[in-house]
Amino acid sequence: MKTVVGVSDLRVSSNSHEIIITYALGSCLGIAMYDPAEMVGGLLHVMLPLSKSDPQKAIAKPAMYVDSGLNLLLNKMYRLGAKKGNLVVSVAGGATMKRRAKDDYFKIGKRNFTVFRKLLWKNGFMIANQDVGGTISRTMAIRMSDGIVTINKKPIKAH
Image 1 (tube, one colour):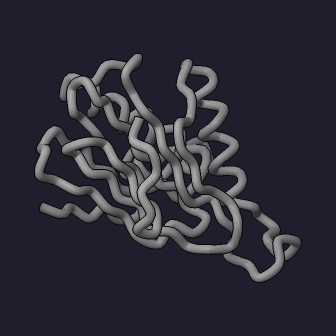
Image 2 (cartoon, one colour; image 1 turned 90 degrees about the vertical axis):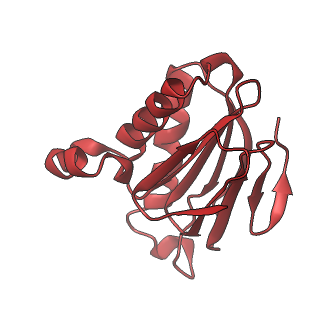
């Protein structure tokens, strides 16, 4: 069973038959987390770094922002039994979609990744796997049976 996560959305699951996938990670970040002991995982597709840029929109669409989206992802995973100390964190995206980096005035991809790293550091998490930056769009998937994350169809380490 394949579940697609759209932009500004997320999915959390403990169904071992499910694969969660998201497409078109340009400056957006795809954040996958997996607890191998509880076999609970999730995938979040965020667009922008901080919810304070539009608090009303953040209430309606918390998964749009790195800070509120990460909080929502963690809370949903904990409700399914995931434990903080078990979580394996993978991230992809954060690219510039301009031909030349100097033309990327707002640096959304870079800012998304910087905010994400700071939030992880503040909360005692480490990134296990990453494929960020550059100028390519990515597709990211996580397989619930074993936590294997693929980025552009290439598997990266699960744990």
